[in-house]
Length: 512
Length: 112
Figure 1 (spheres, each protein chain N blue to C red):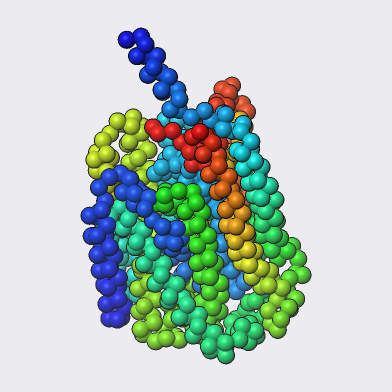
Figure 2 (spheres, one colour):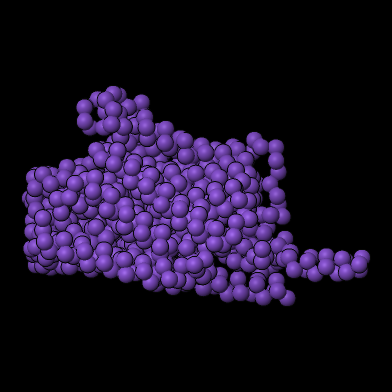
């Protein structure tokens, strides 16, 4: 075990617990718990959004993919960033104006029916759970590698910590843990990038030149097509990346932590700067790892390349930088899973319990208690699932989350705000068909089925040829929402749409 | 009693906003038009710009030729995506300030 890394892990855990302690004293009402009483500034929320986004999959995953496949790994960086234009232009402001605590609130602002809210909550819980299992499986593997702690105990430790943040500190603690982690992550990545660049005499041109001979791929390392060979699959992945973010529940609930649409907009702009700078630096992480750690050693530590960034830190900065980067990676996982627990628990407690079971009659205190129990329930469930999913390829869970978010959530968000004819039947059909079609296509895909034993979950020919379902499931989601609307005999309420149009664009709403 | 009821009803009616009237107002229509004129063309632009990269890299090798030293056009295009995102962010921030002015005006008119 690396003692220095262990000490830094403890410091980070201590720091997050101090944050949680102070946050818990401020978390009394449902608004505190779900949205930190909408008190974050644009700058704070920008960092928190960036933090929610720069998950272990981005930091460790993209660095590894660039190191192993060169240009193709960078497709993720581009897609993840450009996605923020969709969020900024189409989703953030109307969402803030219409919603209160959850995504279902926004859709229910127009279609106030139990089944709409129920289905929206179901989507949120599904997406958050897939994402969370992916993060927890990654966390378990990482901590096992770094500290030598068993997978079982690693997952349980991370699970307990994320539950503590959410249950005691609610959105305030989750946000601040996220902000602290995002700052640490940017600092760590920046230091590594500078050292890597220094080794190439601060010349990007020199770096590219040397990369032509630094890896087993030779000159091809710098060209696209090493990882993504099927054009349709590449386009499908890019489609899910650019449209998925705007439907990810744990990102969407961040817009409720600020006071109005103007602040929501500012937070997306700040986040876009931070995330963009971070993703540019993934080139230095990836290239550096390929050049100074080497293909064999990266593969040896983790077949998917997830250890590329920590190994690079060790190679160029010694034990301390290795320990720092490992501790930051750990903090990253903690913060992201806390955000995911909160988004799933809000959907359970606010939408299912508060609105469907208690029909909006629960007192504020009862709701906070329910939200805390829901957080514990979500955590326990995802810890158990993560224990079973130990040997699963986590990339497939993340791609599933993005595909479901883009296919099931995005069409409904867009139509709720922009389409006058849209009605309840369309909303329910769109959400359910989007969810089921993306799940089904992934379960029939090469992620799950492979003729080669051990390459996927089951041995056999995949019925659906693409690893990424987006190119089929996203249009299906949109078409289902349109078809559901047009086939239903129920007319849309024109007066209600006028109200939605005004609220979405101006924030004006009647006191309830 | 009866007169009290009707007074209560009247205050209730005036308390709830007439959204249809706001939607039909000139200022609101102007806001919608301005937003549409900005968001629709620029969204189409960034989607086209974004997908041009994977389409070109998947179906051709034109981007594999070198631009500067060992940096190929694929990388230049990739960096251009970052520049494009930041530029469109700045443009929107500036443009949105005019939307905010209109929103202020609409709210003021609605509250009479």
